[in-house]
Amino acid sequence: MSGWRIPLTKIDLGAEAEAAVVEVVRSNWLSMGPQTEAFERAFDGIAVSSGTTALELAMQALGLGPGDEVIVPSLTFVATVHAVLRCGATPVFADGDPWLLPADVARRVTPRTRAVVAVHYAGVVRDMDALRAAAPGCLLVEDAAHCPEMRTLHGDVACYSFYSNKNLAVGEGGAVRARDPDVAARVRLLRSHGMSATSWEKSQGRGRSYDVAAHGSNARPVELSMALARIQLARLPAAVERRRALVERYRAALPDLDDRAGSHLIVVVLPHGADRDAVRAHLEGRGIETTVHYPPVHRFTAFDADVELPETMRLAPRLLTLPLHPLLTEEEVDEVASTLKEVL
Image 1 (cartoon, rainbow, N blue to C red):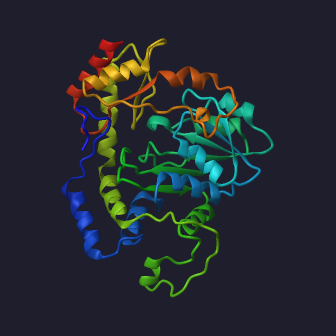
Image 2 (cartoon, helix red, strand yellow; image 1 turned 45 degrees about the horizontal axis):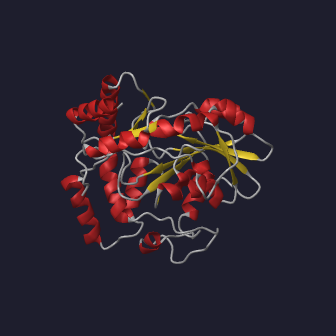
Image 3 (cartoon, rainbow, N blue to C red; image 1 turned 60 degrees about the vertical axis):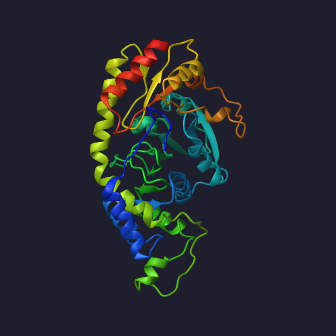
C-alpha cells in the first residue's frame, strides 16, 4: 500500500482480474501457455517477460551486434541503453528535448550507425519520418514503453512495457511488434532459449521433441501476468482517454508552465532557477508524490559518457513528474496544481 495521500500512480485491478488469476491457478499451467497465446492474438504482438527483454530481443533479432552503433536519447529509462549494450553494440547519445532532435541525430550518423532508438516519451508518438530522414538506411527501434495503445508500427520494431506503473499494468511483462515476419519469428525463437517448441506446445501435441536453433535466453512471460494483461488491454482505451483528460486539466490549472505530457505521464518543466528538490519536498509535505523522468543516462556512473548534449542538460534539471492515473480525481489534480503554484 502506498503511504502517499496523492500517489504518483495507482491501479485497481478489480474482481474481473481476480477471477482471471484464479482461473490460471486452477488450470495448473503457470508458464507461457494459453493465456499468453490469447493475449498475443488480442494485442497482435509477441509477449515477453518485460519491456527490457522486449528491447533486448528486438535488437538481437534485427541483427545488431559488435561493431554497430545505435543512436539513443539520454532522457530515457536506462533499459533503453542497456539493451544496446546487451546485444554488443555501442550506444551513441544524441540530444533531445526530451525527444531526439533529428538534426542532432543526423550529425552523429557514421558509417557504423545501424539503428536509431526513438523513445515515445510520456506517451507521445514522435515524428518517425523525420528520424528516418535524419538517418537514412538505418533501422528504427521504437521504445513504446509509455504507449501500449499505439497500434501502428512506425519503425522496424516496437517494444512495449507492462510494468506496474504503465498504462497496461500487470507487474512485469512486455511485448514486441515487428514489421518483418522473419524478425518476429526470430524474437519468438530467442525468448525461450532458441528452442523450436515450447513446453505448452509439446503438451498440446505440437512437437514431441525440439531443436535449439539459436542462442536465446529465458524471456518467457508467465500466465498470471498474461491473464491480467488481457483484462487490462480491454480497459486500455478508457484508461488512456481518462489520462488525457486529466493532462488537459493540469494544463488549464498550470497555464504558465511548459510541459512534456502525453497519454502516460504529466511532466512539467519548472521555471529557470527553481530548486526542484525544494519543490518536491514541499509537495511531499502535503502528501503528494512526485518523481523525475529521467535523470540523463549519459551522466550515470556506469556510463559517464564524454558527450555534449546542451538541450538535454538544459531541460533535465527542470523536469518534474506529477501524479497521473485513471483513478486520480479532478479535485486531486487541482490540489496538486495549486500546491505546485504555491511553492513556485
